[in-house]
Image (cartoon, rainbow, N blue to C red; front, side, top):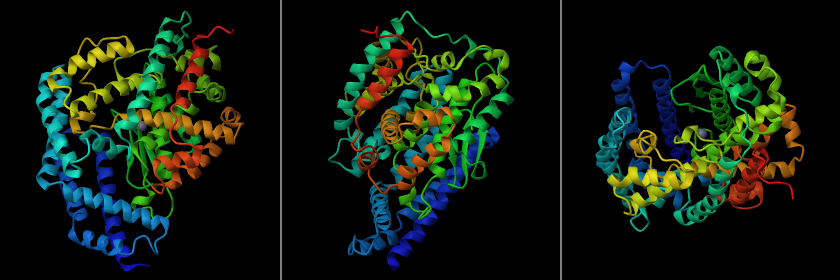
Length: 504
Ligand code: ZN
């Protein structure tokens, strides 16, 4: 084994351990930490972040990389090559950013979050606007340090969805917009609207918890290497692939929200638990991108568990769990009810047809922020106008509009496109899988989830960062991203549910 590579690997493993420690601290903060400890915890996390930055920018890493560069790629297998390239990229990026910028971003990201929470409570965008303005300025500087010749927003998107640029996003979002806006309108205007009354009522939280746990386990979540808890916003976190922690939240008037959050987070968790055995502490084994991670949660949440066959398999269990609420409800009615589509102000409450419009709206706004089209003070109005154009509804307050998402308060610009790219990847993966296994729906109808999980393990999870997103898609589906699968899926499904196309 190459000595410089060995040394570099040890250093990266150490960084990985620090990352895992910070993951556990984050989980603790969201799940069990007393609120009074917020300041102390911010201190722990910031010290850790400082140590990580220091270790990553240590000149010895640069020297080791230089030594490896002189021989690259000869003598290194593709795992090692991937590790070297990933470390080179992280190191080069990290050393380009001045420390005071790193610190100001971290400090403002944390303070900005508190200011956003307060502005949201008081429905006052003007309270948040100055912080937002400064965060945008800092992120522009950040992008400029990384590559002064590249549009800043492309650099920001690339941080979440490697290689993706506005040039690629624009035409795809234009197609989605052109197809979905009329579909959303037809759904609204349809004279047939599914009955959802049985999804409302009282649902014991204890029973919801047991139901979520059962289904998560049947989908393949390994509770010996993971946990399920409660948090305000559901997430999948933890440390190592042997310690994957998912959360959900419960409302006693609704069991769908907690259940689909569990299924969604289980999808993320299966990706983490399914990572390659080799090099687990090194970059090559990590999830490919934010969008691919999201494709794994949405694969289970939408492609599998929002299909009729899934309702067929679980209808007895649903009825047994909530006999009073679901008495006489068959799987067809249940399927239609969980797939109701209706424009809503809040992104996280929206359905799969309207969700992309929430993302396109944010994407267009972020793009306009970073190319100078929009001033921060114009944003509430821009937001509300777009909402009205795309979904036909106009927020009455900023809480229902521009203040709803946490992302910007921490400086996370460029994140949103990953959600919809994840949805499109998930759909394209599902189509490829179905071609390979025409009996896929019968597997779902018979609860053969193990075979589905193994397909994802084999084709996506163990691939880590070995391939680019484009090449992963090509390898698994035979082509690069093609939004037509997603559009066709939505049209076919919702034409049927809402009886939109009279048979010719
Ligand atoms: Zn997710």
